[in-house]
Length: 156
Image 1: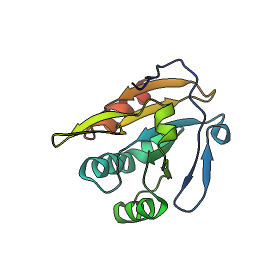
Image 2 (image 1 turned 180 degrees about the horizontal axis):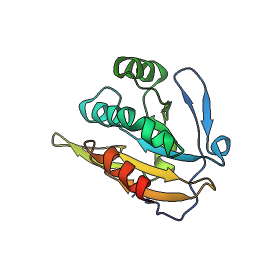
Image 3 (image 1 turned 90 degrees about the vertical axis):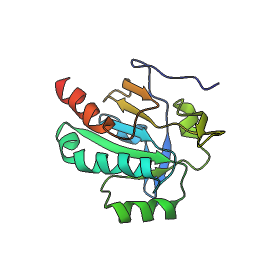
Image 4 (image 1 turned 135 degrees about the vertical axis):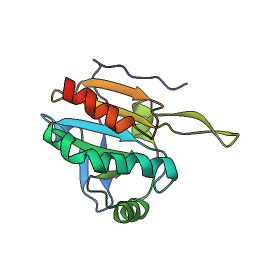
C-alpha cells in the first residue's frame, strides 16, 4: 500500500526532465512555490482536461508566485506532442519508472473500465518556498480541480 503524505511534511526530493532534457529538481526550485501535479497519461480525456485547466489558469497561478509542473510516466516524445497539441506553456516532466510518483504516494491501485491495475493516481501537491508541503490532494477530479485550487491559493 502506498503511503500518503500530509501537509506540513517535507516534500520528497525529485529530479526529472522535460521533453527537451531540461532538468527540474526540488533543490533547484528552492525558495520558490511549486504546484507539482501527477497525471496518469498524456493526451487522454481526463489528463487533457486537467492540463488545459492548468494552462487556462496559469497566469493567475504565476501571479501568485507558483511554478506549475506536470508529472507523468510518459516519455519525452509523448510529452512534447501533448504540450504542442494542447498549447501547454508549463513544463511536463517524465517520471518513466514512477519513482517520484511513488515517493509522493501518487501511485497505487486503480480501476478503469472494470480493470484493476497499479498506476499513477491523479494528485496535486503544493510545495512552499522552504520545501514543505502546504497542500496535498489525492484522487482529484480532472474537472474543476484547478479552479478550486487557485481559489484556495488566492485566499491563503
